[in-house]
Length: 343
Image (cartoon, rainbow, N blue to C red; front, side, top):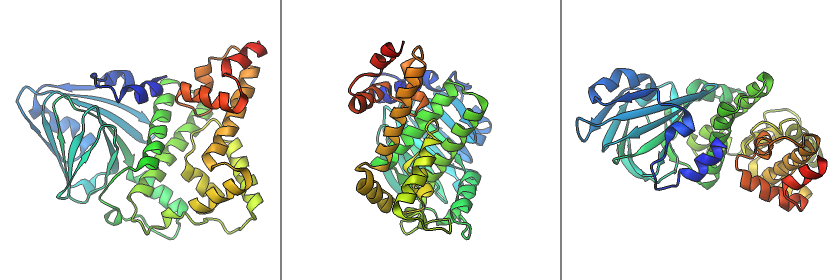
């Protein structure tokens, strides 16, 4: 429910309550001079310019595994200068809420629209200009996590930070992946699962954010764009789909992105889409959704008293309305009807 609330309400023109998203604020300050030492671990080497001496900042924070999600609210015009960014141990996604922010990356300026998502790995300077009453979400991806994934995918290459693109504004596809990962992170934070399931969700969310970061920041000629096989075998088409289906069936209750499926299939993005369309008439993610809806229907029949919202989240649907729509398209009825029959 929290993830759905986020997607629906971030576009509102009304002030958004970050505490409903991330929990109570852990930091509130009304004196700009007191911010530096406290915020340095979260923002790195930075300096804040305030439009007046009575300005305040409020910060919220939650963690999912090694991923940190921060919410920041400023009540006055604020400029944040960040230097020596290449020395930070993380790369940041920055998401303005309700009001756009202006960004200067190593001398290059751009505007990030409301709920647009900007990623920075810049080598030198980053400046954020935030209007009064601006709010931001900032998601930190540890560089160690990126190194680990890069080593897994490409054992013979090193991830060199200076070779990454200094910044990226996520495209439509990437933004969809980011929103799904963010919703899943908020879900497991607010709805604790059993220990084995919790660990698997956290692992998949960390991996998903890392894959998205590498895909966005590696140069366009990078090998990640095609994700070649990291395995020695070369199976026929149907064997590839059988293997991928087994993988999806074993991960119906954990978050997966298209990049997870590409890596598991050991083929390029275009090859996987072509294969699924030829053999199934579906895109890879539509295939995964079909399998998850089948599992959700079976679960509702066996557990007729389970809340439909909880079942939707369990099988990867962070928006109850879309879950009901997909369910009706696939089975010809809304989920609550089969639950009534089963009871």
